[in-house]
Image 1: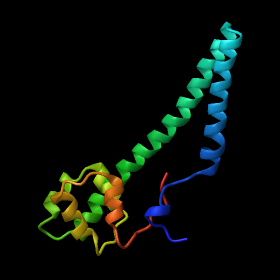
Image 2 (image 1 turned 60 degrees about the vertical axis):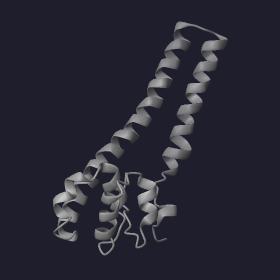
Image 3 (image 1 turned 90 degrees about the vertical axis):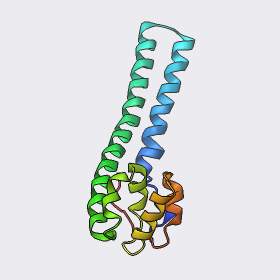
Image 4 (image 1 turned 180 degrees about the vertical axis):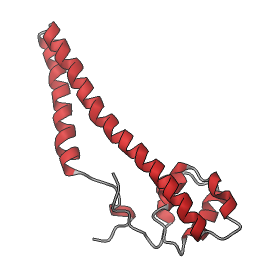
Amino acid sequence: MAQNFQNHAKYVPAFHLFVLPVLLFNFVWAIVRVVRAPSGGSVEGLVVALALMLLALYARMFALAVQDRVIRLEMQVRMQGVLPVNLRPRIPEFTVNQLVALRFASDAELPALAGKVLSESLNDRKSIKRMIQNWRADDLRA
C-alpha cells in the first residue's frame, strides 16, 4: 500500500495493542490492590507498575526524539541539493516540526512548499503534511 497522509503514522500492534494495554492494566490493578488492601507490598507494586508504564512511554518518546534529530540533519542535507540558491541560506530557519513534516514532500514540490512554510511561518506538522501533493514515503520510522 502506498504511503500517504492518511496512513503514514507508525502503528506497531505489539506495542499499541499489547504492551501498553498490559502495562495500563497492571497499573490500574496495582491501584486497586493499594485501595483494597494497603500494605508495603501493594504500594511497592504500584510504584513498580508506574515505573514500567513510564519506561515504555519514555522509551518511545526518546526514540522519536532521536528520529527527529536524524530527520533534521537529513533534511538539511537534502535541502542543500534541492532548494534554489536563494532559499539555501534560510535552511537554518526551519524548525524541527517543519523539517519533519516536509520530509514527505517530493523533490519537485519541496522548494515551493519550503518557501511557503517559511513565508507563512507554518509550524504545525499536520497542516504542512496536508499541503503535500506528491507524497514521498518514509518507511524507516521508529
